[in-house]
Length: 122
Image (tube, rainbow, N blue to C red):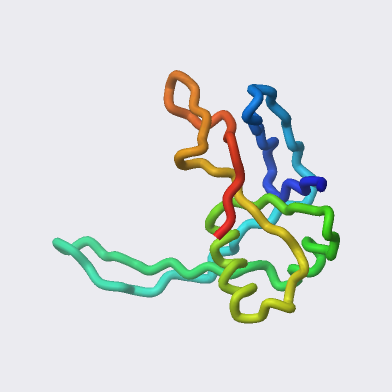
């Protein structure tokens, strides 16, 4: 299996044996695009808006069929993609994961995430 990192920064993964690997960016980046805000309401005179997001139009230019390929995206993008895959499972032929930045995160002394111990999917 090989990883394709669709984020603009390297991903550091610490394996169970303590060794670390760095998965460099692939050169292609997949992030959600803002699709606009919708008024939701207000609290104590402060407006609240619901932000809408969308995926880029041509996802097939990012994903390609490969049974030995795992694509890495951020969690919000993974969640939206999972909704598309559930609605139309034949739309993509890809394994898509996100770095675990929750319980699997590795943090420095200031609490910043510097790596992960695993990937997640939804």
